[in-house]
Length: 47
Image 1 (cartoon, rainbow, N blue to C red):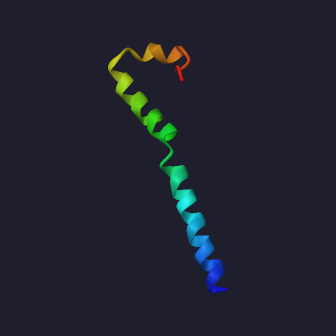
Image 2: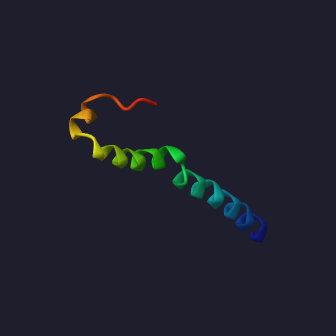
Image 3: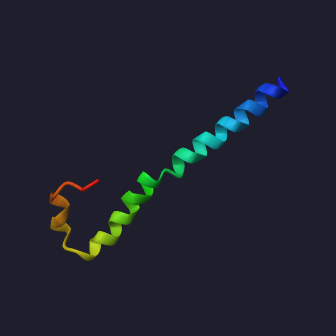
């Protein structure tokens, strides 16, 4: 059972990577755009 636990630990690292997704960070970066009028939100966010 201990070996399986070790494998699960590796999986946790993968999960952490999801939270660290740069995509999510980009969404937060959009807040910087708040300097511009909010109406800009009407336009789709270029990716």
